[in-house]
Length: 338
Image (tube, rainbow, N blue to C red):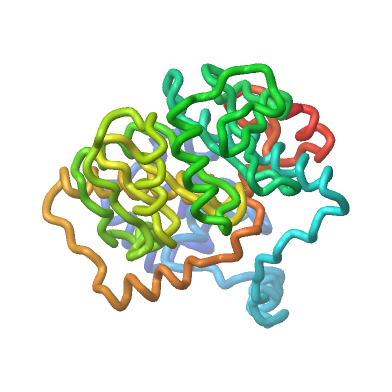
């Protein structure tokens, strides 16, 4: 063991420093094998441990220069802005863009664990034919869906492009929503665990957190549950319950979100499922304290970013269910989704 007294003998300049004397009065020892690691050496070979005792050593001139440089004002914080995507050069380019984002949405939903058996469907309206939309094939694992797997369907249920079956309930729900709401470009619905759990309560989400305020007075409840949605009238009722809001809770069923872009519909679903999970955890822990009406309303308005802004997760690569890189090229991303 090496006492600090030994240190003061080795370095006489520090012998009479009050900090060293104070430590000498305490029966404090350092393992001999760790003296180098604990003390270290810096500057002119002086031990860093002694330097740290009550600020015994004044900062060097180089440190002063660095500190001064760090405190210089180099500019005011820049204002950020999310810009809308420039229009595609052609209908074909826009169609490919939407289909690629739709395929990426399924990959992303797979990463979040939203896929379950045959359930779950996301759609996007075709740019050339507004009465037609692209949808995922029945039974295809979300994490493996590619652009070439997507099926083009009209409002009569006819598969125009593709040779695979589609989810009948998915067609009934999404066709009704696309027909009733021309401003809706995309709609998303899956049987996510937390979405289903919350839907069983038959309640709207409360503004418990800043994130959940995004849905404050901007989501609806479809009640009651009437079984698997197979009848066209049921789809129309859901579209009517949605109204001009961006989401609807299907009681005993799950969540459904819509948006003017595929990115918006996908993000709102992820965010809403997270809000449901958060409230389930909070209420299980104890009594919750919702955010007051005015503050919740202001928070919702502050979170209304441009809906054409690309979500960072859409830029990730990977052919499997988990993204691999944030720095891969556009060509590589596109090839993985074709």
